[in-house]
Length: 123
Image (tube, rainbow, N blue to C red):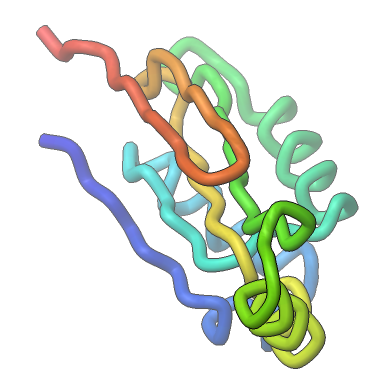
């Protein structure tokens, strides 16, 4: 069975960097694919990768990460204003991040507006 765990921005805002990484990794180590509102800061993503590298063993093979973010440069008029205003008000909460165990995720294809996630067959 494939499990998706949605994490809203407000769940992570009150946590420090280590707490965020641990929360995400707890779900991923339980074989859930995390769908996170917004994106991690570059430092947080680096910490996630660092923590993950130290946990790799025969059972846990690591994580796959993909982030999409609306591209305000390609928008026009009111849509561009709306995205820029939301970015200003909400900070890093725009976009979507998918993080999952490498043992489940076969491939992640992304472009600025969508993510295609392919899983491995479990036998």
